[in-house]
Image (cartoon, rainbow, N blue to C red; front, side, top):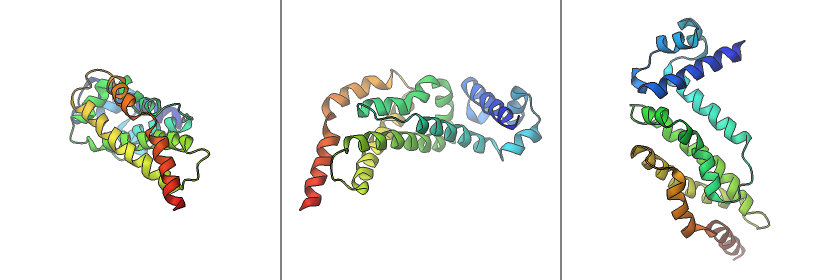
Length: 188
C-alpha cells in the first residue's frame, strides 16, 4: 500500500509538471491529483523539492538496473537522455524553474552511470587503473552533460541523436585509444 501511494504521488507530480511550470505546482495540487491528503504527502516528502529529487533518483536507479555493456558511447548517452526525450514538457518546465539544479545533478549522475559502464567495457583486457577509468568517464560526462543542458536550454529542438551522430563520427575509438595510452603511460 505504501509503495502504491508513493508511486501515485510521483505519477501525479510528473503529470502536473508536464502540464505547467514547476513553480506553479503546489502540494495541494499533487495531493488532489493523487487522491491523498496533504498529510499523506508530507508523510512521504518534506516538500515538493524532495519529491522532485526522489523522482529523478528513482529514474537513476532504474537506469542503473538496466545498465549494460553498451556497444558505443553514443548508445550509453542516448540511454541516459531517454527520460528527457520521453518527457520533454516536464523537463522544460523544470529547466525553466528556479530549481533547474535538480536537473543538472540528475543528468550528471545518469550520464556518469552509463559512461562508466561503457568505459569499463572498453577497458577490458587493458591494465588500466580504476582512477584512469573514472577520470575518462568523468571527462566525457562533463562534456555530454553540458551538451544535454545546452540542448534542453535551447528548447529541446531536434533529438539528441542528431548532434551525437555528428560528434560520434569524430570521436569513435578515442576512449579505447585513451585507455591504451593510459596503459603505456602507467608502464613507464
